[in-house]
Image 1: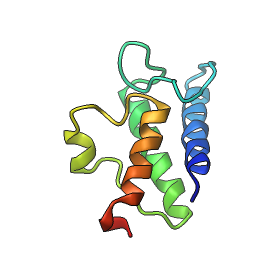
Image 2 (image 1 turned 90 degrees about the vertical axis):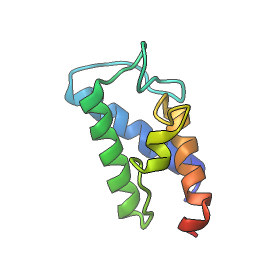
Image 3 (image 1 turned 120 degrees about the vertical axis):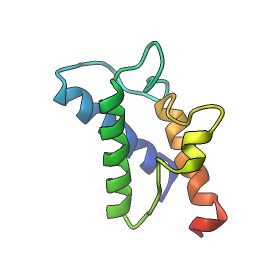
Image 4 (image 1 turned 60 degrees about the vertical axis):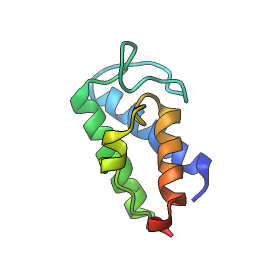
Length: 98
């Protein structure tokens, strides 16, 4: 799967979550998922992660977004749409996923 396809899956998941909560804002790579300027609460983030994992699994890609690596990372992979995208790409390149 191409990087831009994964990015689109993440963006669509964030948009869907925001629509479910009657929120409207532009979603792009810089959209914050955690921190001061976040567009979702903690439950929204969990929903996004589950939605992204499920969509990727439907495409035949098994990625755990709640792995020890993700949770123990010094810099959270959940900071923004771009950081989540980069984390997924790195997971796909990891030897355990080849």
